Length: 534
Ligand code: GLN
Image 1 (cartoon, rainbow, N blue to C red):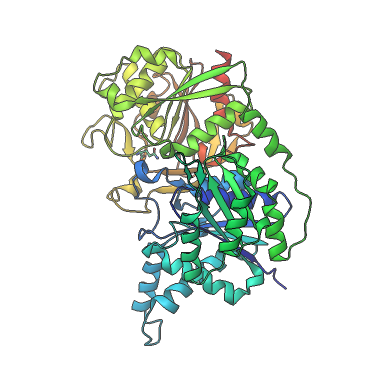
Image 2: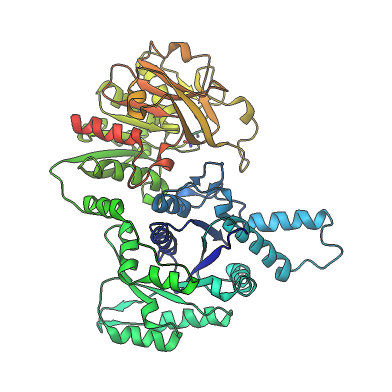
């Protein structure tokens, strides 16, 4: 008989940004550490089809799954917490459900019925959820937004109904709320949480577990008693979770409250022994003050939101901590460099320079200048996707090809070192059409990159339209570059490294998506090590 999947639904109230995603990921981590197979899914009420066209400045990075889905950054958290690759089914936006529903209507699949929010839309959502959960012991579904939002109503209704269809004994509802601290009266207030739980109950869902976020740790038993009284949630199923120094501590905090045991108990699952040793070791390192500290400059377009480059930051941090090094990540305004408002000599203060991925025309010249500087001054450089492209242009310019450019900077130039891939022409403004997800890369022997990877074949995740122009690749050697990774099918250049340079590596893919807190990506490790050796 196929395994019956149990479900956990995570909703949030009071305000957004409370860490529902981290809560969902933490519970998944705790269950997985006990040998239970888990999947995670994020349901986003936006009317977009996916996260591909969302502005990363506002919404944070677009995370790419191995099968090429452009998703919300929470999927990155999920993958990092449970060290498991998730597929496109783990990200569901309203637009996708509606689009398919209307297509079915046009195809006459409803037999003349009125097509309605209930049951057609809610059934469709349930279908997506149960398909993603199939085959796993436990499937954890996070509903984006806050309860009471107009746009998330159909998702809330869908998970309410699912509880009835699957049996409430197979489902756990977790609600994440906020307990504000009023400084003037030195009081923790429960009223906003009460209101939010009332909203949730008004929509027909009685939460089983409450995660109460607070600014600080507090031991006020009366507060828990009070929450218990108004919510009907047992005291041992209420956790008070203060702001943590690192998000990776949250699973341990929830474990302290026994939330994982409560989940097992509610779902009728056996209580096996958890193994969190490596995770705990990582947290000890993450909080340690090492003798060594390095400073990395990120040459970026968006300076005000670290979430824009979330996976990059996480990959840098984990590579640093496993090499017993503290890391400071500093923003460098690429537009400032371009406008001549930034003295390039200041780049010398960094142990390494990183140019992350990006799109559009703005600030590209600033990125090229930073890469030129890194090349000339033997400063370790890691270029990710756009960072490879700007790195190659920098090398060409340093070698005298002053007009070297890319399809994004000058679409008409004959000296485009980076061109639009053949099959991408004309698709520039369309969603979901880039070269996305996993592609193979063959690594050349006796290169720095092959030493780091310790293998001659890797699979990495992509999201781009441009490639190195084959017309110029024979000049790379002259420019001091070596092509050390290519895609065996399309022959597309996947990795480039500097020849006489301490560490100059550019990848057409995004290694940051495969880096893990306990298993940092080898290229990030190499980058960090090159800075330590300095
Ligand atoms: N804009 C570039 C391209 O489409 C780089 C993309 C990226 O950095 N992800 O090729």
